[in-house]
Image 1 (cartoon, helix red, strand yellow):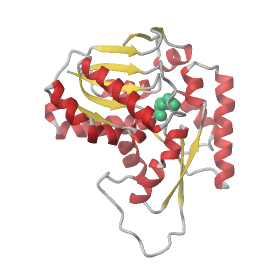
Image 2 (spheres, protein in one colour):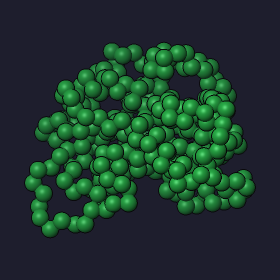
Image 3 (cartoon, protein in one colour):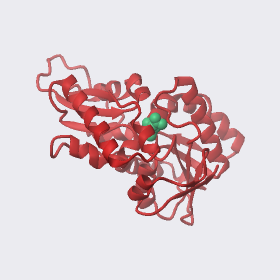
Length: 283
Ligand code: DGL
């Protein structure tokens, strides 16, 4: 049985790379829904349907656990699928299967608190607010998932989400570094203008952005801590396997990369990030 990793495109490779480092002997199958990328400007129902179709394809390819390495799908589709579709899919496939997201691990890393913790409402006004800036797709920003979930746990953290429409699409197409630098700088500046200062901490809330994490680090003030979503997700999966041994089956280190789009080599930007040319096969 394999670990499935799903994204609209190449962004989930950032999470996949960390997971394969952490679980080197497990089999992995990656699916990029490049025929429908980017997801960030799509409507909720469409994102739910596309995510369900992608997960079904990964279960057919032998996945037992799927990590939605996509903030947009995790914010919009995960809960619906877990509640209304996974039980039926589990019965149909006749084996333990599950779909996990990446927002919970990121919020645990950002707040330093386990997901089960919900802060009791404090009577006193909190004066010194620490500001977390979340760079994400329009759909993730509109869902307000980071604002809502961080606020439940840490009232001393203020959260500002900055939608970066178009950025995931540019990364997916392998846009040149000069163009990406300008776009990233514009979004960092836009967030600074909204807050009145730079955030104290940043979350790259779209897995595509991790591919250009160096550009975000350069655009933010020196030393701004950036939550590393791939590490947070790998830590969380480790804990999940400890609690659910039924999914922690062995493997032979197989790596499959599938796309619903045009099969073939990925862009130079992806090869640079990956450290070698990477080719996707037809899903
Ligand atoms: N990489 C995905 C995310 O984390 C999707 C980006 C998109 O398709 O717009 O949100």
